[in-house]
Picture 1 (cartoon, one colour):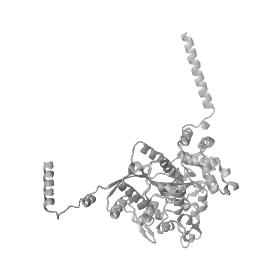
Picture 2 (cartoon, one colour):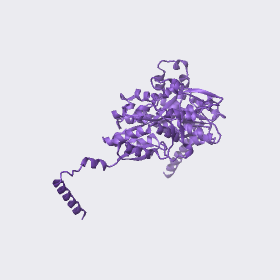
Picture 3 (cartoon, helix red, strand yellow):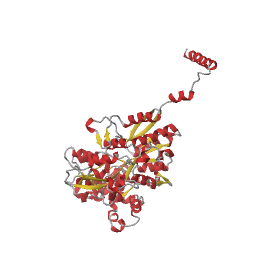
Length: 500
């Protein structure tokens, strides 16, 4: 019956159109208005975007106006995109736990349009030709909707534009989201800053079973290399070398067979001095006082210090004198997901830009505790938020000046415009973790991408470290095992001889 009705309707429409040419139908307009929504598949770290539902007292009252998270940023993006482009977009949002989990998800066939891996995984995906390049329009600074390119920190932008994979710079494929450094959250009542500010803390037997280390091969490898090269990295000759930055990166990313073996020996040596290898539990262990120092990413370090402070328990943050790792997570589009679909690509780039809008940057930083790659450009709200968080009260006695010009100031800006007056204690607490000083960043190095051969060697080393530690086995155990095996062989031989 439905087929008959459709046929009759079609015939009537055709007759009307022939008899009345004045009543034309704009087919293109009709199809545009009835166009299916764009489905954008986004995969991000867990709890790594503002989910809204703030309490009224959480309102951030900046000089430029209040900022408040009522809905999730995903929901707000869907509404903003329709209002801006007249097209509905539906975001299918999902999470991953580690970079390796994400890569495994991609290799078994999961398909996403936009993902947010860390720097070394971005390099790996670039090298394997899995990424869709950002469009030329994305870099148009005259487009007021391009919040990313108009607001990304000059410091971050320089990193992306001066590092490459196979001759292609990172910025052609990746847009920075959050960034930070690594160091130690520590209890200043139990351990001194001098003791905490070195990778050699791992081997300090004064704090046996009171220190944690990261349960992933990249971070543990990096910190071990720093500890093994501590004397060289802090020597005057090395520090004053004109090629210091490049030499530092080369050393901290050394994957020679000799260094891999040395790191394995070092990790097996120190593991008995550690409280645990951990990924997320270190924050709680610090807050509850189970450990005195926790090797941590700066974003989680800020969270740990904030939570402890709620119970009047004050923790500090120290950056190793040898080096630190500057890490970042960035948005990249997957070639398999975008699949030459211009509507998807526009929506994916718009999602990056929406999250880079300064008010949304502030919402994200407040909600997740990490530091955005966006400084805001001519929009002052990100800097205002920093002052809102850490600025000293007018009657603060122990206040000092702290410059963040290296992160905020563009060419032609006056660096003095980016000097904060802060409580002196913040020079060893949350502020230094969120916005490290220029001096700290000078000894920061990036974890570069390791090729397949190096990765295989390091992963095998890590399995030997995590699954079996020969150094922790008392001599009596292998001796006893050998005697048991020998006794078994003798028993079988005697049994066989008896039968004969």
